[in-house]
Image (cartoon, rainbow, N blue to C red):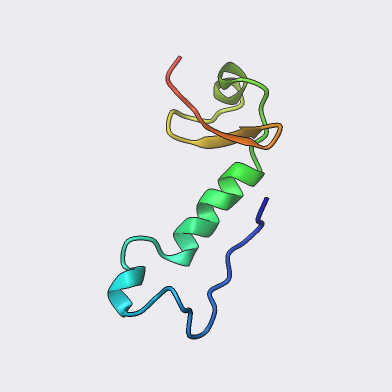
Amino acid sequence: MPIKFIPQSDDPYLKKDADMALAKFGHINFLLDQINNNAHATNAAALAAGLVPGDFYHTAGIVKVVIPA
């Protein structure tokens, strides 16, 4: 699983400034940190650990989103 995204200079997929407007690398790296640092067996375990609905966690490498109990 990636640890961090690092932008390339002259990224071939970003043709203009507007291409970066919706998702900045900092936002993507925040999501990766949230996923990488939250391993829980179940949704209930994630909630018990203090995660809130909408947070990300993983179970055996599968990314999941916390849902309300």
